[in-house]
Length: 323
Image 1 (spheres, rainbow, N blue to C red):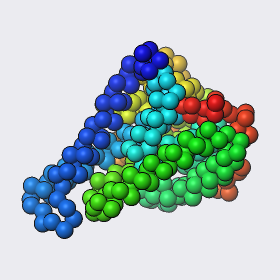
Image 2 (tube, rainbow, N blue to C red):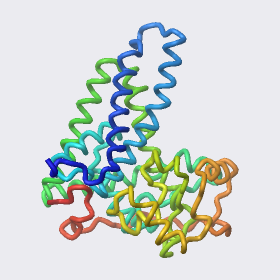
Image 3 (cartoon, rainbow, N blue to C red):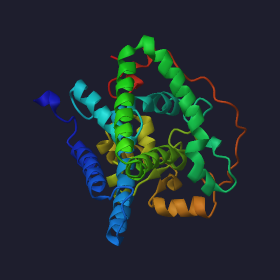
Image 4 (cartoon, rainbow, N blue to C red):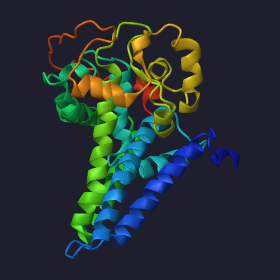
């Protein structure tokens, strides 16, 4: 039985919140009146509260997706592949397609023109608009690179391609079924939380890298060190150490950050409150560099080709690699 167990006991928290997401979705689907039915006041309140909880749970599923493609949670490979299908249904996007743009583009080429989600693409003068629309600003590049990489992988590494197709088909079938049953419920309870999760996980990149120094050993990432935030985001607020050792399990990040990062990093890159940072930076429109110097947008050219030979990058392609 050991080969079927979790690699890290901390991922019991991961499984708990994934279970809560699906359970809440099932309950809300069952108790929400059909689209043509008249809603009572209780129905409106129940639906609103449930929806407001479902969105952050879907985002937590997206964070779990990020964690799983760096460090698989089960000892058994087949179980990890099955879990990727489950995560696809929380995140609303095939988990395998998260790998190229994140692992091979963003991690290897942070903030350069080979990083398809570099924050220099956020060019509104009012920074709040960059927060709201960062995903549309980078999505075209992400989708183009994903498509190019997927076509290359189809013949060179069919196992990875097969896993991607399985995730895509399952997501498509489940989505069609929900829309066929009740398209109004499907939009509110299925589609919108997934869009929120995708927006959140991509936009988090803006918070963690904008105004930082990608050439610095320590000051390339912004860290949010609130214990409450990191409880629900599986310590993803500790971003510097994650970039240094992407395969390190999330439960170990705070201790390694305290030991190896905190003594060297600029104090402004350890933010105690994300809410205060969001207000000061985006609402009050203070887009400064991490050290307080004025922020200047660099000249933004087209994406550079970042796609490597997959035979040289098996270790970087997520939970199952390419084996």
